[in-house]
Image 1 (cartoon, rainbow, N blue to C red):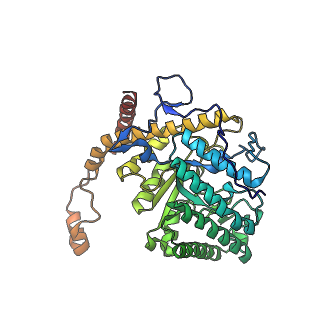
Image 2: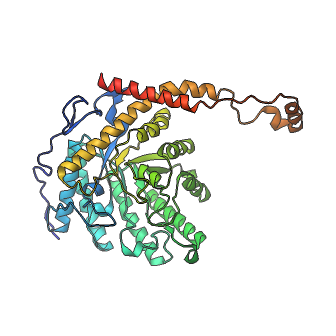
Image 3: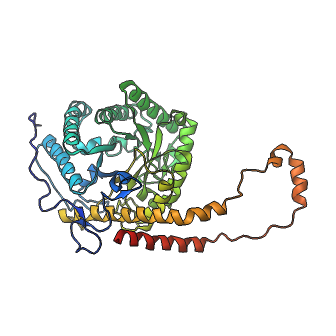
Length: 446
């Protein structure tokens, strides 16, 4: 492995221009049809509402799936450290060309396969120097950082929830090193998604032991963060199943119960990083899960992508369906936005779309899709909020006398006439949503 400084190349993605907004009437090319990063919305540029983040792992992806190998193989150097640094520089150039403002990654995205814990501890400070250099030069900011606790074979039985103490300790040491990176680069979020924290069969599993181990692991990470002065939030990412049949982080409600049960909620530092494709996989609609996380006060950030529900595995498609982000953005906008979070593009092209041009067309597709969704959500909120306010105008938790004198309440109710059947007007609301879509496209075309 080289010990020399790796020189940044003049260009990593030749032939790809800086992507600018040209509008939907322009010829299709390397330009935005709908997303105008500099358009001012509610007093700030659109890009600052989105906090779009490039995901290092999908930039490096070889586009393999469970049935076949890589169709894209980009290697910048035969030296593993040099190659990793070049990929960080390539990430910088791609993000800048795509007008993204943030980046996210796992520790192993910036390293290489098979690296030992000792090598990891020695190498990460050099990687952190490169990340700080990139941030200083380009203005890119970290959205979140995390540790890969699912790829190594020893994590097949779980990492934090492994039945083996030495595996738990290895996972914890790797998480400490990754959290130190989050602190050094100033990441506002550190994601705690093991990927394999769950089980396939109850016959060889003790749930209580594993959940307690998971909580102990997270408390250890949190306490280490306090010791080194990490000020960001901790994100847990829901996934209903895959690769395990039962995931301990299955959905928002499951995570909320876990945070409450083990005392994490009282810190105010634990949030949800919701991935749209994970919702698709488990039949959980993005808008429902996001709205629930907002209600509980634990929405942190979003991983933007799209799934293929009939396929049955994690596909991480580029976003193409505008309805999904439109309905998801409605509660986000209504609650004041994403705050320190953003949209991390955990999405990749299909294996047959293996060229560099495909890579960038895919990112532009996703950014344009979510931009359309955001604008539709703004207009939908304007049309639907008055209706919802009216619908819930006399909704209360419980009438006063039902709490103070329940017997009197029962006598009063016995004298009331049968209730009239009211309409939920769902189809009318859906028509209003369609009108919001038309208004959004009219504004984007203006």
